[in-house]
Length: 424
Ligand code: MG
Image (cartoon, rainbow, N blue to C red; front, side, top):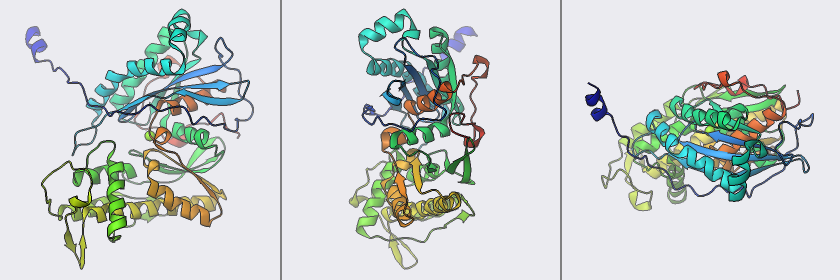
């Protein structure tokens, strides 16, 4: 029985990962400090507060090191390496292989992050001699996200906490996106549009919470884009959303054909499931010319179908889908600006890298006399430094997480967190 069990045990193959370039820390920015000023909480030997941030709630696993320099009153990102699990074409990333990917890379990422942040001598000497010399706390993503991947990273965080005898700080992933956005762009109190594979929310700060003004009532915008990319056979490398953006650019520059699609804004909320069904139906009626399922988007890949009086292509569909769903987001963001009287907008989350979304938002914000802050892939896309940034704020206001409370949760709303580091 036991020998049968051991021979039938599955040996997992190494899982594929993207060749992510190093996430350099050259965009070090100053953020207006929270008031009242942070406590000198658990400084290291050099009087600085240094935290490790660990993220793995979806298909990215990342480790970032963030430092608070009390002399200069600034936060610095010392390192921020990450790895991305790329699922095969036609498939989304499932919890199990994603968790295995994270387990395979997390330890190496911790080492790389330490070596990038400090010299080898310092890591070999000071850290091994006494971790208190360098590290103040270990921050990790508590949720929301996928269970297995979240747990894989949390286990590593707990292990480091026990090994180094340093406290843990549990972080809400959505709040981390906001805090990283505020740090990287210097926007102190913006209306936030948070758009990613798992989340779509318009938020604004009030009375120590990030209040949700509007959100999706079904699927997230990134999920809508990812699923459509699968239907039209786009690769998941570097991301389905990026490949749709490239196809949409071809559609925009060649035919500029805006196909009418369901536009679903319900008060301050949005819905993407109906529009996804419609574009999937339209895509299914386009004949697959070359029968290839994994082609990079080129002008040659255009295959046409007649809808009504119009001949449309996959590129037209990508263009029309982006224009329609981004217009919905711009509409609810504008309404949140009007309601709060805020002139600043900050876009965060993976879909926030999309240049067309940034462009459309810029037009609206400019017309209102406001300003837009957005980021590139280094800080928009999930990363470890953002968990460190939200964690170091909490730590500086005396918040750490007991070991017994370091469980993860797949559902954890942005407005469930008391932002103790912000003025009431
Ligand atoms: Mg995210």
